[in-house]
Image (cartoon, rainbow, N blue to C red):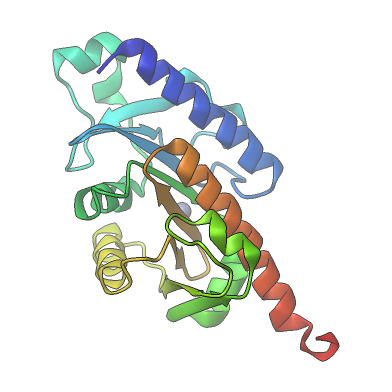
Length: 220
Ligand SMILES: [Zn+2]
């Protein structure tokens, strides 16, 4: 993996962090962002860092098992890689990369208030978006006329269980472009950072629309 390429990827995620914080999606050190460098090597945000002030120092490279890599190639790029602590939710990122390699090369996770409220209201199940032009922002969706269904799973502090549950629900719903964790937030992905960003932006937009629709039935 080329050092300059890694720095460019870090810079893209730094920009995303600043923007998501401004939008209120990544407050109080919440959220985590990652990108696949190659199979089994993922660049991810360090745990507990403020997302509006990310620097290149706030990233590390982890392996398939979510632990920091320590081999020489990695240490020449990030000298303190082995001593950095990855985001608490790294396991869920790693699971998405492992189980869905053909469509997941970047994972973005936010704690936006509306996603937290709506998913908490649902608890467990799914949400169906239908009739919105914005659905076309998702990979493979060509018309507003179809239904985009995304899973909602219960939150858990047991990341192993949460990851397993997310992967199981997504394998039953292979075209879901993102997943909601109840009272917690959104996980979205794409074949690169750009696609993941577009998916997340559309997800936030549709959640917003869904919420307005749900709470303003009388005027529709
Ligand atoms: Zn989270």
